[in-house]
Image 1: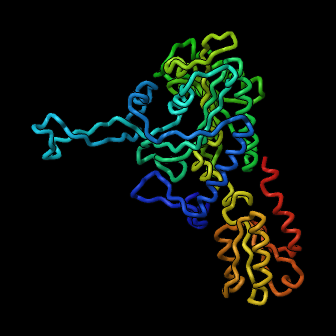
Image 2: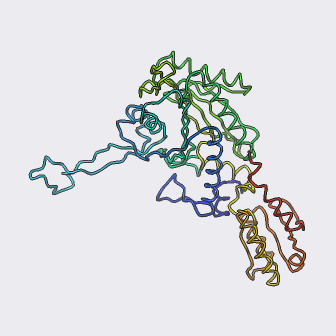
Image 3: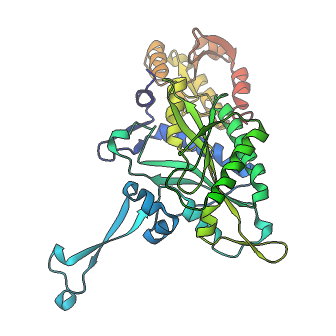
Length: 414
């Protein structure tokens, strides 16, 4: 069973409904996983100098027209309409639906870049603020064709670690290097030592001059070469406003899915007239980088479930289940449960009348990484019989040893 939807059902993480195709219904256990990834990403971004922001879900049509998204992706955007009274009717009162007008003036954002530009432009910027690094866990909507939807792998609503950097051209190599370091560290933390890098070059339909595209493409190619990363060139696969590095992972079937990305953009700073005051007191135009390390968090979880068949211990919604053999060990098992809970471990206590074999079977089906079995002898010796997911047999260890093992969770993640 390697389909992420089947694994998620067994673990009670999430499901899909016909009422909202391409959108995830997160269950409590699944949201634990989601929030754990968010918090991990939040710490990583903060350590690399990013400030977290939040922007509206809906932005005006005029903004999307200015950015070029309306003309390029209008058919794939969720347009928000509002009914307004048609005041041309005699007396100004509406008597039928035909006398109302729908104004399609807003769209749900498919990405956060125009919103982050608005935050940058909220007031005059100084060179002391450059590079400015903004990020948010952006809820985005893309009206993908129904035939392309595929569980968490391709959705209509998802969350990105959506980040943008406003910097000088001289900063680009350093910022791209920071991005690739984040990718390398984070992917390894999730168990991925290998990924592929593609540089997506200019598409046929694009905005901006060839000179700007030449500069942007050269920056990405030179960065990969100088930083020692192998890459492939994907002609015509860039965004309509900038070329990009795409970081892709394979699923269990060998299909590659784009996850991380960074784009070098000279066009939006021109279109939106971005500037900062440099050391000479003159206005200077920044370069804009668009980046996401994981990309869609939902897709990331889907790939993780399919490749590993479960979740790593640090990420599992229930990390440890303490299970009793009989009522005689219930008190000691409860004491162990409370100690682990105080440590911040995501732990469950199973001290009901079910047989231990049934408890083990049900917990294994839920893919709980560690099952700590406590019988009468273990209770007396302050030990547990520990079963590890994917490892045959069980091991009797001191409860103190289990505490020590779990105390390092998360500390050595990055």
